[in-house]
Image 1 (cartoon, rainbow, N blue to C red):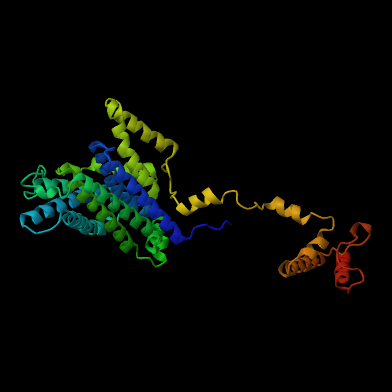
Image 2 (tube, one colour):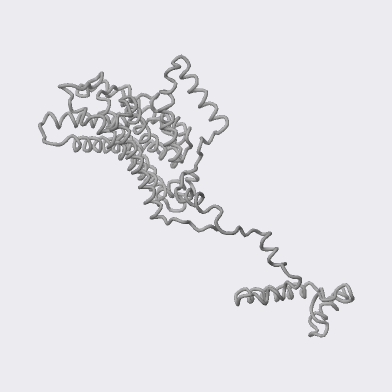
Length: 416
């Protein structure tokens, strides 16, 4: 087995440096004017999609429960953040834009988490299509409630004098902050999947009855996962509200939820790496096909169908990118001799007197192991009654002049 070049802490450190380098690259591209506002908008949308997709992957991929109401939680977080931000400005509370932005998105995530617990306790007692239908209905209920709430604006909130709190900071600042929020979200979900809670949730996914029989509180763990997923969906909604500057109840519709489910399935259920790649790819792909507006959705749909036919487990399946394995493959490959079975056989038969040469070059441990093997072989041969008589058995079996145990066995064989 190859020894890893990097320890776990070193792997995390290198990964952190890589993320920092990526952030500096994004910052350089934005600050030097190489990225137009259109490109910055795509980056922002991709970050929101990554948060939504990785949080939904926790429910669909890790827990194994299909939910279709993720955009309902996103809408709850969006309206909570928008209304709270509007209230802070209306009350004249002195607060920086950065603080207001962070407080409102956390509040939006907390509100979505509360609704996640309320919906998850009864809904997660169901399985399969029934759970999907319940969560789909939840999203539609949220949409209808928002439409009929007077303080929520009804047809949507717009930025301006009456809604200045919807925009806490400008888009460039938002992009940098949202980048780190996305990184923290992915890091938390990755560590959760590798924690004892994550392993317990995967056990529930594989066999809930066996997990329950092993002493796991399956109801608690499923509701916990549902609440965590709803929290990050609410955070994504709060970011969306204060980036776009206007909200509409249609954002809680089922079609938007289906789009995020497609991203999870496309990348690979259970793979955070796949969720990130698919979220970014399926955010950029429609923009690249915008020039072919008549055929854009056709190409998009055909690509998804082909993936489902030839790669039903998704592009990445359950595979996760490992930095330590990548570095080992990059730098360790080719270092040191490869010792296979053939090499061991050649070394063992290098001289005509293999036993003698082995004994001469043997260490105490290998010599002791060879003695054990020799005694085991002699015992097996003797117990099989292969005493060896005549020329054909010369050198095989125990010494004819040795004690008569073998001879007694031979006599017994003759009588039989």
